[in-house]
Image (cartoon, rainbow, N blue to C red; front, top):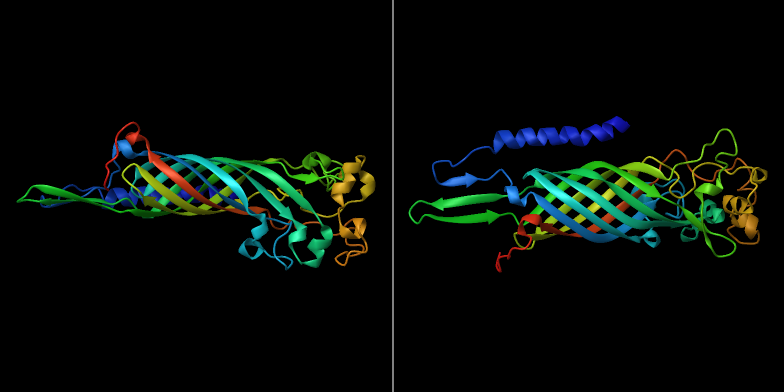
Amino acid sequence: MKKFFVLLPIFLAAITLTHAQRRYGGKYSGGRYRTTSKVNKGDRFELVGGIGLINFLGELGGANDIGTNFLADFDFEALRPNLHLGARYRYTPYLAQKLNLSYGWITGDDRWTEEPARRNRNLYFRSPLFEFGTVLELYFLPEKNTANRNRNLDLRGNQERRILGYVSGGINGMWFDPTGIGPDGKAYSLQPLNTEGQGLIPSREPYSRLSWNIPVNLGFIFKLNPAMSINLEFGYRKTFTDYMDDVSQTYVDPSVFTNPLSAYFADHSLATLDPSNPYAIPGASNPGQQRGDPRDNDSYMTMFIKFCYKISYWGKSIPKYY
């Protein structure tokens, strides 16, 4: 399955390149019309920067039903800011590649849901998220530059598509560090505390805070002038870790912990901290009871508004009218 996700963008890119070369490699037809299939050499590179929002989809918080996934578990309270830098290179009007670098925050809180088991669990996390990688963009609304030549007047007029559309996919590396708020009000990194017995019991190994994901995006580019454009992009990230929120498996016997903070974050349930709370479920945090769901890895969604600038126009004047 992992090989499938990695090879799919490469396979689609090869098909797109072959199709573009076969269909749009011509010159003038009868001296009147010319369809430009190539991207001008100086216009291939773009710098990209923007801001957006990110929404974590994992065990913590979420919808008011148990076992929901993807959009069914979308949580407005979990929306957090995200910053983006990138560079785009256009191979053809139908294919581009983009390098991405983004930094944001993800969060989840069981207090945001009315689902009894999650509410009793009473866990919270906050984590920085650093993402870096590359995607291939396949354009279903590609660059269009048609020169129409009038033989009598020898005039040319260019018709350019002002709105471009694409889908993209690729591979990203990512770094995260889930933290929680301790009894002293300070933030603590949860991974070294081994809250599910990682490294303390034979069957569980510590998880890595460095992982990877498969990004899938839908984007639209709105041209402002020949040099500048606005890029609106919606994305989904399928990750290959279930520990972005430090929650995945079952509660462990608190006697395995030697650090009081580990025991505090391992079982922060209302049944333990506040048995009189109406959401408290006695026995729900006993050793072996469900704490997370290892069957589904964590994921998240993104939305960006980006500003794009073609490097070929750097230091040059831009036409007043477009």
